[in-house]
Amino acid sequence: MSTEKAETKTRLLVSAVEPSADLHLAHLIEELHGSRPDIECRGFGGERMREAGCVIDADPTAFSSVGFGFFLSIGRYFSLLKRFDRLLRELEPAAVLLVDAPAFNFLLARLARWRGVPVVYYICPQIWAWAPWRRRKVLRYTDLLIPIIPFEEELYSNDRVPVHYVGHPLADELSALDDNLGEELRNSLGISADEKLIGVFPGSRRQEVEGLSSSFFNLLARMELDPDRHRIAVSALRDDFVDVIVSAASSHGLKTEIIEGDCRPLMSACDLALVASGTASLELAWFEKPMLVFYKVSRLGYWLFKGFFSVTPWFTLPNILGCAANAGEATVFEKLLRSDNELEPIAPLARELLDDEEKRAEVVGRLRKLKEACLMPGANAKAAAVLNDFLSSI
Image (cartoon, rainbow, N blue to C red; front, side, top):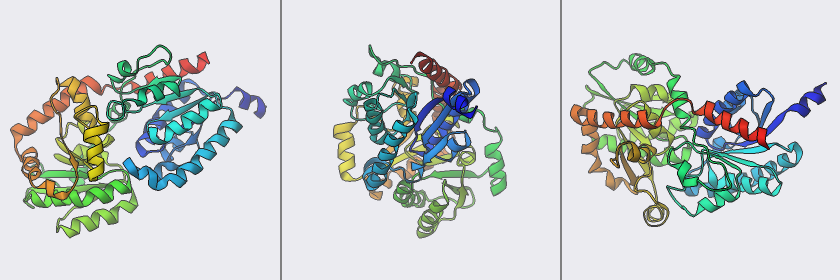
C-alpha cells in the first residue's frame, strides 16, 4: 500500500539558498499542499520550508552570500551540486523548482535540463539590474518563469517559455501580520509617542552585518541624536550577529536595543530605518517607513555596478518599483557605500527624514502609492495555480 502511495506522488525537487527565498518558497509549498496533497517537495532550503512539509536534504541558507562572497563558499556549493545531481537521478522528479539566487541556481538548472527534467524559475533573475545578456540563458534553461515584479513579464516575454507574473509574495506574508505589532514592541521598550525610534537592519547574512554595522553606527553618531527624544534599536536575525552589533555600537558610544529574531515588529515600530539593500527595504516600504538603504561595495564593485552591470539607475526594489508607480521619482534614499567618509553629507538628510514632518509625509505618501500599485496580496495562490497547471500539462 505504501508503494502505491509513493507512486502517486508528484515530486518537486526545489532549491532556495537564501533566508528570504526559504520563506517565500515555504509559503508557496503550503499553498501547493492545500490544493494538491499529492505534491511532495524535497531539496535545498531552510527551517521555514521544513516546517511547511518540505524534506530538506541540505540547508544552504546559513552560509548564503552576497556579491563576490559567493566564491568564498564555492567548496560548499560544489558539494551541493553533486548532491543535487544524485537527487535528480534517484527521485526522478516531475520538475525542478528554483527560487532566486541565479549564481548558484543556474548551475542546478543546467544539470536538470541535462537530465531531462523541466525547470520552473520562481522569483526570476533580475536581469534588469545587471547583466541583461543573461535573458538568453534564462530562457534556454527554463520551461516556466514565474516573475514577481510587474515589468518582468514583458521583459521575459518570448515564443517558447511561458511567463506568468503573479505579484510579490511579501504582500501575502505582511498582510497577515497583527496590526498592533509595532505598538506592542514600542510599549515593551518603554518608547513613548513623543520619542522617535530609529530601526537599524544590517542584513540577513553575517558578511553584510559585519560590513554595515559599523557604518550604520558611524552615521548615527554623526546625526547628533538627542537621547531624550531619539531611541535606537537594531535587528539581529541570528544569534551570532549580536556580538558584531554590540561591538559596533559600543565603539561609537551609542546605547541601543537589540531585537533578536523576527525583524518585522521593529519595522512596524520604527520612525526611520537604516537598512541593508535587499528584501528588507521592500518590507519597510509595506510599513510605509522612511528609510536610507545602503549597499557596501569595494572600488571594483562600484565600478562594475556603475559602468558595466547596471541597466537601471537604482539598486533598491522600492525605487525600481517606484519608478513605475511614481513616474520615475525616487521613493527612498539609496547609497552604494564605498567608505564611511561618504557618510558626512548623509547625516543631515537622515535627521530630516526623522524629524521634519513635512518631509516625512512626502516620503510616506510615495511609499503608500507604491504599496497600492505593486504590493497587493494573492501572489502565493496565483503562483500555486500557475505551477499546478504546468505540472498537469507535462
